[in-house]
Image (cartoon, rainbow, N blue to C red; front, side, top):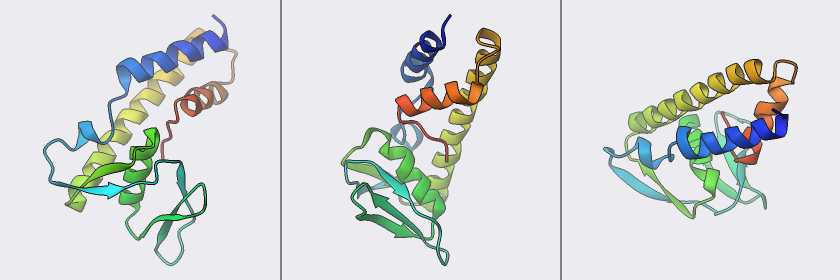
Length: 141
C-alpha cells in the first residue's frame, strides 16, 4: 500500500466512522446559547495578560477571553466553518465537552499512529498523520 492510498483510507475512516460532530454530539443535555462565528477560518493569537484573542483570516476579532476552554471549543466547532454554534451556558459543561472531544481525537491519533507503524513501518509517521489531519481540517489543541 502506498502512503497516498493509506492517507485516503484513513481520511474516509475518520470522516465516516470515527469522528463525531462537534459540538452537537457532546452537548445534547446542556443548556446552550448561540454564538456567531465568521464562517471562515480563525486562529488563536498568543496569550497576553491572561487574555486570548481569536482572529479570523482578515485579522478581525472573533473573541477575546480569559477562558482557554471556550477558545478551544470555538476552534474545534469551527472545523466546518459554520455561521454560528451553540455554546453551553455552564462553563463546567463546556469544559466537559472539550475534554470528551479531545479524548476522541487522542484515540484517533493513537490508532492512526499504531496503524502507520504496521502498514508503513519505514514511513514518516508524523508527516502522514499531519497530512491526514490537514486534509480534513482537524486539529488537536
